[in-house]
Image (cartoon, rainbow, N blue to C red; front, top):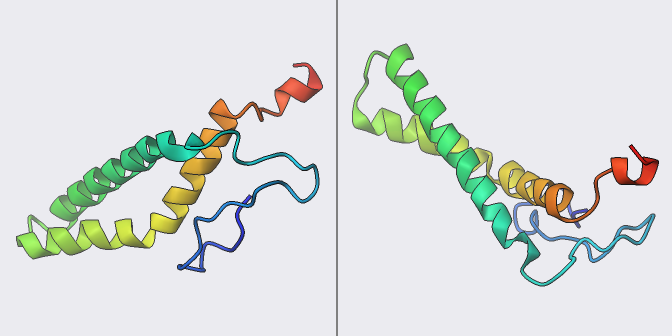
Length: 105
């Protein structure tokens, strides 16, 4: 679905126009993936809460700069994963790609 690997930080979010095997178009309409930003936002909120609470309990309420590092660093590292998979979820939910439609289930 994507042109490059997630480790290519300059182009990790670029989508191919169509599948190489079945010619399925990955962009059903212009602006299709804008809604996926809400999923990305939800993932980031979960990261902030999980890493913030873990920092508080594991480090016994450290100084504020420790919270910043403990919350922002994992969020930045997970950005390629989060943006890519939010688009995949968006395509599966709203793009009529669900595998059960072909098998008749």
